Length: 105
Image (cartoon, rainbow, N blue to C red; front, side, top):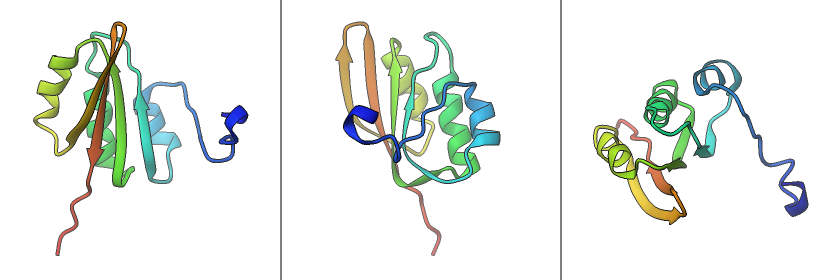
């Protein structure tokens, strides 16, 4: 981050997602990168918690790294979020999601 001049614009956390969302995040976020242990539901659980806690901005982007692309995509069907891109790098699949906060009139 420092090499590209982003050290003042980016916050990186390496901790349990639920502790981070419940206790550390106080402001809404623009971009979330989730790299959970493979063969867990942590990515889906984290997205649900981010939405429930109101941590996502309108138009936030979420990136999930997984080796279980089809399983994750199936679970995402039950969440109000859109898949906007998918990419494969070796064993890892990246799923790019777009969250659009719905405003009531």
